[in-house]
Every structure is written in C-alpha cells, then in structure tokens.
Amino acid sequence: MTHPALLKMLEKYDLTNSNSSYDALREILQEMVLLGLYDAGFFKHAAFYGGTALRILHNLPRFSEDLDFSLLEVNPNFDLKPFQDAIVDTLKSFGFDITIEIKDKSSNSAIASAFVKGNTIEHLLNINAPKDITNKIHKDQTVKIKLEVDTNPPLDFQTQNIIRLTPRPFSINAFMLPSLYAGKMHAILCRSWSTRPKGRDWYDLIWYIANSVELDSIHLKARLSQSCKYLESNKIKIPENLTKENIKELLLERLETLDVEKAKNDVQPFIKDMREIELWSKEFFVAVIENIKVK
Image (cartoon, rainbow, N blue to C red):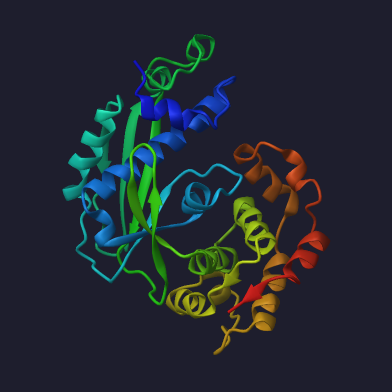
C-alpha cells in the first residue's frame, strides 16, 4: 500500500509514460534522501546547492539528477558514513528499500560522494506507476541518486533554512538564491565542455535572469579565485572587482565557444516543453545576458 505522504507528493506528477514516471520516482527519492539527511543532523554541517536545489526548493521547470552540498566550513576529513543509516531508515519508513554505496575519497579530491540505489520496478510500483509502464522495464534496472559534498568549499556564501511539509515537516539548510546563482555562473564560466556543452547551465541562467535574481558577486569571486579551468587554460584574467559589466564580458566571451545545438540536445531530456528552447541562438543569449543583475 502506498504511503499517504507519497500520494500527496505524486499529485504534481504525470505517470502516463515511463520517462515521466522515472523522473517522478527520482525526484521523490531525492526529497526522501533530503529528509533522511535532516533526520541525521546533516544540515548542521552542510548546505544544499546546485541545480536540484533550484528545482526542489524554487520550482525550476526542469528535472535535475544529483544532490550537491557544500560544507559550511572546510573539513577534508568529512565522512558521509555517519549519515547513511538515517537515510536508509527514512526511506524504508516510506516503503523504499535502498542501499547506499559510499565512495572512498582520494586524498587529492575535495568531493565526498555516495550513491543511493534501489530497484526501479519495485519503487515505481510503490508510487503507483501503471503496470503497462513497469512491465517495460528490466527487472534488474536500478534507480540511482548521486550525492556529492564539497569538503573544501569556496566560502562567502549565504544560506537559509527552508521548511518542507512533505513527506513530513522538516527543514533544509540551503544556499540563498544569489549564492546559488553564483555557483551556476561559476559553472558556465569555468566548466570544461570539450565537445559536450552543458545546456542545463544555460537553461538555468535564463531562469535566474527571468526571475530577476541578483548575482552574489562576492561568492562568485571566491569560487573563481579557488579554481576556474576554462579561464586559467585560456589565460583570461579574473577581474579584481567583479561588476555587472565585466561579468557580462566574461559571459559573452564564453558564449563565443558555445555550440548551441549541442547545448539544446543536452537539456532536452530534462524539460517537458521544447518551446522553451526553440529561440536558443547566440543572438538570443546576447540579448538575455544584457538583463543580468549583480549585487
């Protein structure tokens, strides 16, 4: 029998095809993991950020894959193991049988990571997915949620506690929108694309600009100062003081290297309405970038 809290959470999802059912399952599991982390006291040490934070906490209209966190202070010895039992127990209380695989962190890595795994069919049945959908899925297929914790975070970010009422009341310590925006801007300016640009970054940029979010320039400077592969490899100097104008210049320079069609291909699996990206072109992004707000 499906837990009543799950029935409430399912009201906003379309379960009429396998892709949308899987997206719903993944997102519900993400929220359950966040609840388990809250139960374990994780948010006393870390804050939620990244694309999934924007999706779950601020209704970004695209799905997102991973759960990203930043420690509140540098701790290279941070370990996820003390939190795994609470995650397992919390998900079990809502009918999800999962395992957690914690990756051994190498000494030269600042990222502590883990995977939450479960059987896809079992969990789809738990959220009342139709049998004609579950019958098409291999019996051994797994659903995975990746957790990553930055143990050496650039600081100067702002956080807030956000109350969630489902699956039961709890709170999440998360980056405030301007600091979330700074993280996304860092990804756009610094990520090594090779031949696969991340269209999701540019989609999120449009969301921030459309919602008049002010970019946290102090946190962006902290991130750029810590690392920026693209700017470093191209010998592009990071301005001493970040302003709206020089951030726009950096963005426009990065835009020159963007393959827009490949960026569209990247974001398509994560959105429902393809009309959202039909205007995408370099000229479109130049016009959008004119509207950024910086604080």
